[in-house]
Image (cartoon, rainbow, N blue to C red):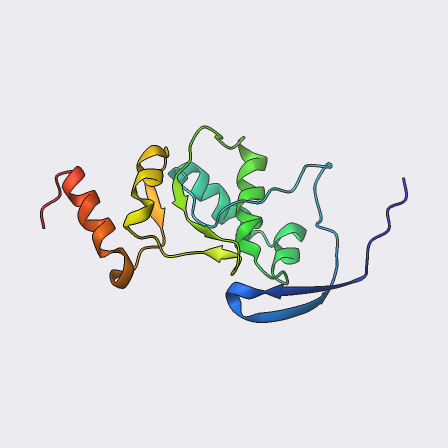
Length: 147
């Protein structure tokens, strides 16, 4: 099947406040395996970390491809790990408040507490001392953390 795609790419990255122009290339895959994408923050055990580091050290066509991509850590790591072991979809590690206007994670505040507590996430992103102090105090009180 013939598939046509633009040769050049143009991407506005609002959260980085920049524009990127590049030549589109196909991701080299071995044996037709899929390419994965996901969050930059993820958890893995020591065996998977060793596998990831060894794969990246081999300088494979996949690794060389990602050296020239805009946000490699949202796909390379997930692809390498998923080719080794299927990802667990039952874990939602991080609660993120997404701002559609800026197309990025927004700072959480006390108004996010009910949604945060009802999620299965064990982490939350992003919290700053200026807007998230009440949220942190509430979480400390709920989980018995010392002030």
